[in-house]
Amino acid sequence: MTTRRLAVRQAHRAARLTRKVYHFATVPRFRSRGASITATRGELRLLFRPATAEWFVEHEQRWYRPADDTDLALALTELAVEFIDEQLLRTIPHAGELVWVHHDAEQDTVHLDFYSSGGQFVSRVVRGEGDIPRDVVRWTDPVHDDGWVDLTAGLWAAGATDLTIEAYLPPHEQLGDKLLSIAVDRGGTRHTRTVVLTRGDPTVVPLFRGSAPAWGVRVGLHSQYPEPASDSRELGFQLVSIERRR
Image (cartoon, rainbow, N blue to C red; front, side, top):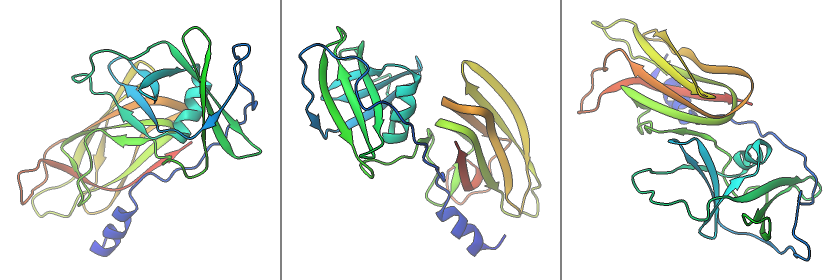
Protein backbone atom coordinates (compact mmCIF):
# COMPACT_ATOMS: atom_id res chain seq x y z
CA MET A 1 0.00 0.00 0.00
CA THR A 2 1.38 3.42 -0.92
CA THR A 3 1.79 6.18 1.66
CA ARG A 4 -0.74 8.29 -0.21
CA ARG A 5 -3.34 5.54 -0.27
CA LEU A 6 -2.90 4.87 3.43
CA ALA A 7 -3.24 8.58 4.22
CA VAL A 8 -6.43 8.84 2.22
CA ARG A 9 -7.95 5.79 3.87
CA GLN A 10 -6.97 7.02 7.31
CA ALA A 11 -8.78 10.27 6.61
CA HIS A 12 -11.95 8.23 6.32
CA ARG A 13 -11.37 5.83 9.18
CA ALA A 14 -14.44 7.05 11.13
CA ALA A 15 -17.28 4.55 11.16
CA ARG A 16 -19.46 4.56 8.05
CA LEU A 17 -22.95 4.51 9.47
CA THR A 18 -26.31 3.69 7.94
CA ARG A 19 -29.27 5.28 9.63
CA LYS A 20 -31.95 2.95 10.93
CA VAL A 21 -35.39 4.53 11.06
CA TYR A 22 -37.92 3.41 13.64
CA HIS A 23 -41.62 4.11 13.32
CA PHE A 24 -43.65 4.64 16.47
CA ALA A 25 -47.01 6.11 17.31
CA THR A 26 -46.82 9.89 17.59
CA VAL A 27 -48.54 9.95 21.00
CA PRO A 28 -46.99 9.08 24.35
CA ARG A 29 -47.68 5.56 25.60
CA PHE A 30 -48.97 6.97 28.84
CA ARG A 31 -49.62 10.43 30.20
CA SER A 32 -51.04 11.82 33.41
CA ARG A 33 -54.54 13.21 33.08
CA GLY A 34 -54.70 16.90 32.46
CA ALA A 35 -51.03 17.20 31.49
CA SER A 36 -50.28 19.44 28.53
CA ILE A 37 -47.34 18.93 26.21
CA THR A 38 -45.01 21.78 25.31
CA ALA A 39 -42.41 20.82 22.71
CA THR A 40 -38.99 22.29 23.36
CA ARG A 41 -35.47 21.93 22.01
CA GLY A 42 -33.17 21.18 24.90
CA GLU A 43 -29.65 19.99 25.52
CA LEU A 44 -29.60 16.22 25.95
CA ARG A 45 -26.87 13.71 26.75
CA LEU A 46 -27.04 9.94 26.41
CA LEU A 47 -24.98 8.47 29.24
CA PHE A 48 -23.64 4.93 29.58
CA ARG A 49 -22.39 3.56 32.89
CA PRO A 50 -20.02 0.67 32.08
CA ALA A 51 -19.80 -0.58 35.68
CA THR A 52 -23.52 -1.43 35.78
CA ALA A 53 -24.38 -1.42 32.05
CA GLU A 54 -27.02 1.25 32.74
CA TRP A 55 -28.24 3.94 30.33
CA PHE A 56 -29.57 7.40 31.11
CA VAL A 57 -30.72 10.45 29.17
CA GLU A 58 -29.73 13.65 30.94
CA HIS A 59 -32.17 16.53 30.61
CA GLU A 60 -32.19 19.69 32.75
CA GLN A 61 -29.77 18.12 35.25
CA ARG A 62 -31.95 15.05 35.74
CA TRP A 63 -31.22 11.51 34.60
CA TYR A 64 -34.01 9.53 32.97
CA ARG A 65 -33.88 5.82 32.17
CA PRO A 66 -35.06 4.72 28.69
CA ALA A 67 -38.34 2.92 29.30
CA ASP A 68 -37.37 -0.19 27.32
CA ASP A 69 -35.01 -1.47 24.63
CA THR A 70 -37.03 0.20 21.87
CA ASP A 71 -36.60 3.61 23.45
CA LEU A 72 -32.90 2.98 23.94
CA ALA A 73 -32.51 1.86 20.32
CA LEU A 74 -33.97 5.09 18.98
CA ALA A 75 -32.08 7.25 21.47
CA LEU A 76 -28.85 5.65 20.27
CA THR A 77 -29.55 6.77 16.70
CA GLU A 78 -30.19 10.35 17.82
CA LEU A 79 -27.79 11.17 20.65
CA ALA A 80 -24.03 10.98 21.00
CA VAL A 81 -22.95 8.59 23.74
CA GLU A 82 -20.87 9.71 26.73
CA PHE A 83 -19.30 7.50 29.39
CA ILE A 84 -19.92 8.02 33.09
CA ASP A 85 -16.72 8.40 35.09
CA GLU A 86 -17.23 6.21 38.16
CA GLN A 87 -14.54 8.10 40.07
CA LEU A 88 -16.52 11.32 39.72
CA LEU A 89 -19.94 9.78 40.27
CA ARG A 90 -21.34 10.14 43.77
CA THR A 91 -25.08 9.79 43.27
CA ILE A 92 -27.45 9.32 40.36
CA PRO A 93 -29.74 12.36 40.29
CA HIS A 94 -33.44 11.53 40.23
CA ALA A 95 -32.89 7.89 39.29
CA GLY A 96 -36.02 5.98 38.31
CA GLU A 97 -37.61 8.64 36.12
CA LEU A 98 -38.36 7.45 32.57
CA VAL A 99 -38.05 8.77 29.03
CA TRP A 100 -40.19 7.49 26.17
CA VAL A 101 -38.78 8.01 22.67
CA HIS A 102 -40.72 7.88 19.42
CA HIS A 103 -40.31 8.95 15.79
CA ASP A 104 -42.74 11.32 14.05
CA ALA A 105 -42.65 10.08 10.46
CA GLU A 106 -44.61 13.04 9.07
CA GLN A 107 -42.30 15.69 10.55
CA ASP A 108 -39.17 13.49 10.49
CA THR A 109 -38.48 14.40 14.10
CA VAL A 110 -37.85 12.40 17.23
CA HIS A 111 -39.81 13.16 20.39
CA LEU A 112 -38.45 12.44 23.85
CA ASP A 113 -41.15 12.53 26.51
CA PHE A 114 -39.89 12.72 30.09
CA TYR A 115 -41.87 11.39 33.05
CA SER A 116 -41.38 11.43 36.78
CA SER A 117 -41.02 8.21 38.74
CA GLY A 118 -44.71 8.52 39.63
CA GLY A 119 -45.76 8.56 35.98
CA GLN A 120 -46.41 12.31 35.76
CA PHE A 121 -45.51 13.98 32.46
CA VAL A 122 -42.64 16.45 32.84
CA SER A 123 -41.70 17.77 29.39
CA ARG A 124 -41.17 16.93 25.74
CA VAL A 125 -38.02 17.59 23.70
CA VAL A 126 -38.11 17.45 19.90
CA ARG A 127 -34.98 16.60 17.96
CA GLY A 128 -34.81 17.36 14.25
CA GLU A 129 -32.59 16.11 11.44
CA GLY A 130 -29.00 17.28 11.94
CA ASP A 131 -29.39 18.27 15.61
CA ILE A 132 -26.78 15.85 16.85
CA PRO A 133 -24.13 13.44 15.55
CA ARG A 134 -25.20 9.85 14.91
CA ASP A 135 -21.85 8.20 15.55
CA VAL A 136 -22.26 5.49 18.18
CA VAL A 137 -18.81 3.93 18.02
CA ARG A 138 -16.39 5.22 20.64
CA TRP A 139 -12.75 4.38 21.30
CA THR A 140 -12.11 4.22 25.04
CA ASP A 141 -8.44 4.65 24.17
CA PRO A 142 -8.51 7.28 21.41
CA VAL A 143 -6.77 6.65 18.11
CA HIS A 144 -3.78 8.96 17.71
CA ASP A 145 -3.89 11.75 15.12
CA ASP A 146 -1.43 9.84 12.92
CA GLY A 147 -3.72 6.81 12.85
CA TRP A 148 -1.87 4.63 15.36
CA VAL A 149 -3.73 2.53 17.93
CA ASP A 150 -2.12 1.86 21.30
CA LEU A 151 -0.62 -1.53 22.15
CA THR A 152 -3.64 -2.16 24.39
CA ALA A 153 -6.81 -0.37 23.34
CA GLY A 154 -10.55 -0.66 23.58
CA LEU A 155 -13.70 0.55 21.93
CA TRP A 156 -17.40 0.46 22.57
CA ALA A 157 -20.24 0.17 20.05
CA ALA A 158 -24.01 0.49 20.22
CA GLY A 159 -26.62 -0.41 17.65
CA ALA A 160 -24.22 -2.46 15.56
CA THR A 161 -24.79 -5.92 14.10
CA ASP A 162 -21.28 -6.22 12.64
CA LEU A 163 -18.15 -4.25 13.40
CA THR A 164 -14.98 -4.57 11.31
CA ILE A 165 -11.65 -2.76 11.24
CA GLU A 166 -8.74 -2.68 8.81
CA ALA A 167 -5.35 -2.77 10.54
CA TYR A 168 -2.00 -1.99 8.94
CA LEU A 169 1.58 -2.85 9.94
CA PRO A 170 4.32 -0.97 8.05
CA PRO A 171 7.00 -3.10 6.38
CA HIS A 172 10.03 -3.82 8.55
CA GLU A 173 13.14 -5.84 7.71
CA GLN A 174 13.40 -7.45 11.14
CA LEU A 175 9.73 -7.82 12.00
CA GLY A 176 7.12 -10.11 10.51
CA ASP A 177 3.42 -10.68 11.05
CA LYS A 178 2.08 -10.46 14.59
CA LEU A 179 -0.89 -11.52 16.68
CA LEU A 180 -3.80 -9.35 17.76
CA SER A 181 -5.86 -10.60 20.72
CA ILE A 182 -9.53 -9.63 20.74
CA ALA A 183 -11.91 -9.79 23.70
CA VAL A 184 -15.59 -8.99 23.10
CA ASP A 185 -18.05 -8.42 25.97
CA ARG A 186 -21.57 -8.69 24.63
CA GLY A 187 -24.77 -9.44 26.51
CA GLY A 188 -22.93 -10.47 29.66
CA THR A 189 -20.74 -12.97 27.78
CA ARG A 190 -17.07 -12.63 26.89
CA HIS A 191 -15.61 -14.14 23.71
CA THR A 192 -11.87 -14.11 23.00
CA ARG A 193 -9.87 -14.99 19.93
CA THR A 194 -6.58 -14.19 18.18
CA VAL A 195 -5.99 -13.05 14.60
CA VAL A 196 -2.81 -12.55 12.58
CA LEU A 197 -1.98 -9.06 11.28
CA THR A 198 -0.08 -9.26 7.99
CA ARG A 199 2.80 -6.84 7.64
CA GLY A 200 2.87 -4.57 4.59
CA ASP A 201 -0.81 -4.95 3.66
CA PRO A 202 -4.05 -4.04 5.45
CA THR A 203 -5.67 -6.88 7.38
CA VAL A 204 -9.47 -6.99 7.59
CA VAL A 205 -10.40 -7.87 11.18
CA PRO A 206 -14.05 -8.62 12.03
CA LEU A 207 -14.46 -7.66 15.68
CA PHE A 208 -17.93 -9.13 16.12
CA ARG A 209 -20.89 -10.30 14.08
CA GLY A 210 -24.48 -10.96 15.03
CA SER A 211 -27.98 -11.43 13.73
CA ALA A 212 -29.40 -8.34 15.45
CA PRO A 213 -28.05 -4.97 16.67
CA ALA A 214 -26.35 -5.13 20.05
CA TRP A 215 -26.64 -2.27 22.53
CA GLY A 216 -23.42 -2.00 24.46
CA VAL A 217 -20.58 -4.12 23.06
CA ARG A 218 -17.14 -3.61 24.56
CA VAL A 219 -14.10 -4.70 22.56
CA GLY A 220 -10.58 -5.01 23.95
CA LEU A 221 -7.56 -5.21 21.63
CA HIS A 222 -4.02 -6.21 22.57
CA SER A 223 -1.16 -6.43 20.08
CA GLN A 224 1.57 -9.02 20.56
CA TYR A 225 4.39 -6.46 20.84
CA PRO A 226 4.88 -2.70 20.29
CA GLU A 227 5.89 -1.31 16.94
CA PRO A 228 9.11 0.72 16.59
CA ALA A 229 8.34 4.37 17.38
CA SER A 230 10.22 7.66 17.41
CA ASP A 231 8.57 8.67 20.69
CA SER A 232 7.58 7.06 23.98
CA ARG A 233 4.27 5.65 22.77
CA GLU A 234 3.64 1.89 22.75
CA LEU A 235 1.81 1.35 19.46
CA GLY A 236 0.02 -1.72 18.19
CA PHE A 237 -1.07 -1.01 14.60
CA GLN A 238 -2.34 1.69 12.29
CA LEU A 239 -6.09 1.98 11.85
CA VAL A 240 -7.01 2.20 8.16
CA SER A 241 -10.80 2.08 8.53
CA ILE A 242 -13.61 1.01 10.81
CA GLU A 243 -17.01 -0.02 9.52
CA ARG A 244 -20.21 -0.67 11.41
CA ARG A 245 -23.19 -2.42 9.83
CA ARG A 246 -26.69 -2.19 11.27
